[in-house]
Amino acid sequence: MFNSIAWAMGPGAQTGAQGGPQSMFASFLPLIIIFAIFYFLLIRPQQKKAKQHREMLGALKKGDKVVTSGGIYGLVELVSENTVVVKIAENTKIKIGKANIATIRSSADED
Image (cartoon, rainbow, N blue to C red; front, top):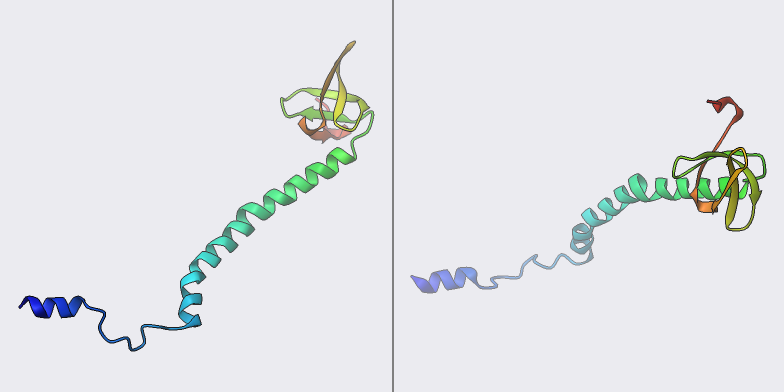
């Protein structure tokens, strides 16, 4: 009785157990599909947005109306390599990191 159970659990005949490269590809196919989905839904849009933000910061110039990532509205007074001086009120200027500029407002966005 136990002998037949032991034989049933053994390696058995190896006919067709090794599928070669096709079965290996078939086992990796779900992982490849998941990676492709993540790339097109998460990674690529994030890279495009980061590229647009870098281009926007490169085009920043004196006189632009900006909004910082902290929500401060102001007018650019001076642009250097890594920092920006923003006028936020009469006789009030702040120096912030260039990467903290969230958007450049257009003239139509007046409050």
